[in-house]
Image (cartoon, rainbow over all chains, first blue to last red; front, side, top):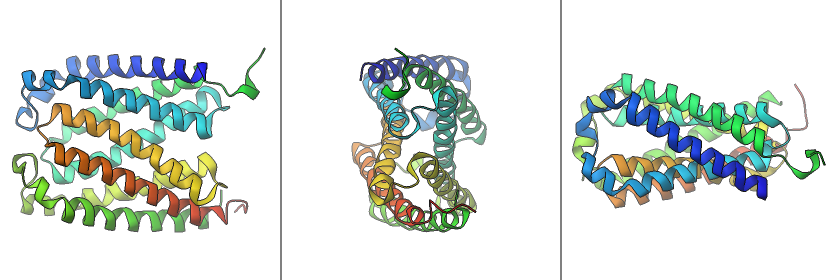
Length: 137
Length: 139
C-alpha cells in the first residue's frame, strides 16, 4: 500500500508538471489559435481544481490498472501499459476530431505530448510499485 | 494469445462501443450537446469527418481487447468489467480536465462520465466473456 501511494503521488506530480510545461507553456500559442473552443483564462483559473482532480484521477487509475494486472513486470510493463492507455486516448481524440472543430495540428501535438506523458508515467510507476512477492528484503 | 478469440472479442467490442456511442452520445445527449453548438462541427462537416469517428472506435475496441489480453486474459466477465471501469476512470480524469478548459455544461460533463463508465464496463465484460474461453489455447 505504501508503494501504491508513493507511485500515485510520483505519477500525479509528473503528470501535473508535464501538463503545465507542455500544454500550458510549449503549446500555449497553438492553443491560442483555437481560443474560441476554450474557456477564457479567468474562467479556466476559476475551475483549476477540476484540472488537478482530473490529473489525480488519471494518475490513480493508471496505478490501479498497473497494480491489478501489470505489477511484477517492472518498468517495461509500466511503459507497455502507458503506450496502450495513450493509444486508447488517441482513439477518443479521433472521435473528438470528428465531432469538434479542433485543428488537426493541435490534436497531433497533444497526442505526442500524451505519449511522452504516459511512457514516463509508466516508467515512474513501474520503478516504484512492486508487488510483495517480487520485493527484495 | 488466441488470435481467433481476440478478433471475435475485438469485433464484438467495436459493435457495442459504436452502437452505445450513437445511442448515448448521439441520441440521448443530443439536446445537451446542442446547448454548446459552437463547440461542435456543423452536421455537414461532421459527415465529412465521420470516418474518424469509426476509426477512433476501431482503435478503442482493439486496444481495450489488447489491454485485456495482456491484463487478465483468463479472468472472464468480472475481470473484464473491472478493467473497463478502470479504463473509464482514465477517461473520467480527461473529462474533468476538458470541463475545466472548455465551456462545457455540467450536464454534458456528467453525461460523459456516466456514459464512459457504462460503456467501458460493458465493453470490458463483453471482451472478458468472449476472450476467456479461448485464453488457454495458443495459436
